[in-house]
Image 1 (cartoon, rainbow, N blue to C red):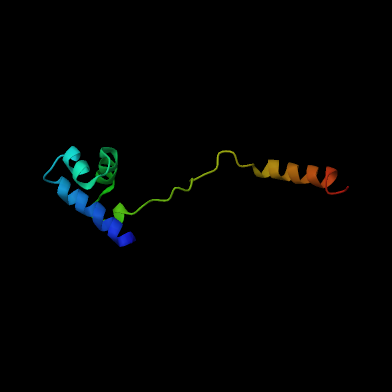
Image 2: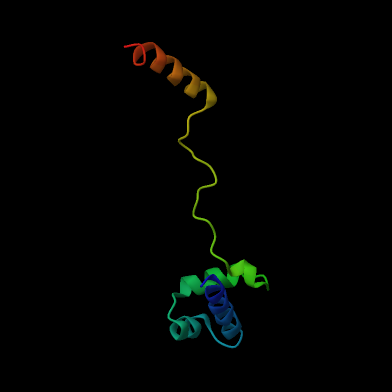
Length: 82
């Protein structure tokens, strides 16, 4: 199914060469924003049209090593010794 999806997106890009974004989005029933996104992403290879990960690159709210050490020390002192 993944190959079908990439081929579908590539067909959209090929169709776009002779038509406007609005015509393309209406014909293939996808939003104009999506067509623009795929158009921007496409570099000539079908691999560029794959879905990208939604996983964050970094966690803003993660604890630092110093904070983890403090938490472990406090947990050991107050909770684990009861």
